Length: 316
Ligand code: MN
Ligand code: MN
Image (cartoon, rainbow, N blue to C red; front, side, top):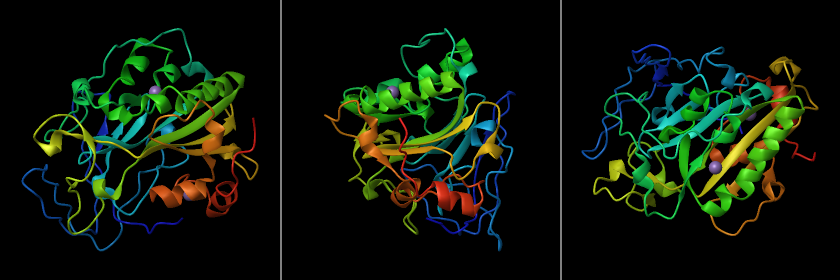
């Protein structure tokens, strides 16, 4: 799928210093109406030309390119040393999280946290989800960048316990096929592969935040966890979680991606009773692009994307 290049509005919040470095990129989208229950959208300045995409070199975790769709106004980019988040302030969920997994990410640090914390990197005015916002909903705090893939240092592991890195996920999936694909990925890294991974949720149209002109309003029909009377403080439940993994021999970088490169793409329904076999969910990247509306692997040439995105994973 090849979504049109749209203007981007992104807040690029860079860690490393105390200040939140917010960069507003130009967009050709008109200002959208706000509603009383939602955080007002910063008005993008109208621009006749498309804004830039996430600039190449933004993060090693985006070495194959950031996923792109036609609705950047619901994406807030949070760049961290351990991973990169596209955050959806209207669903109180990440749209996606991207990270590189390499053998040196796997160490001896175990799970450093028992609960999840609000992400201090979110700009003022954006609701910060708390661990307890998931309470009683029947859903796990489902990691996207998993704890078990960030065990080299305490800081790396603790960073995975931010609520910008989780979605409400059924335990059967979180502890089943999703977990077995995470473990499989760790084994591939230990074998000498670098894995470029992006994972996210898929939401029902009732939870859409990319519609215009009523855009950004998550409808009452959107299923959520959380007990707040304020819908802007509830967490939308995805109907599925998905993941794309590209494997490159360690240290060779993305230039090593070629027509024979192995790519795993899966979409797992967010429901009970699936078992641990992730291979039953394998699909092509092209099919996942159609499902999510994202273009993946955007920094690879169109020819290379066309080739490797059409092949379902057939390895072990
Ligand atoms: Mn998990
Ligand atoms: Mn693509």
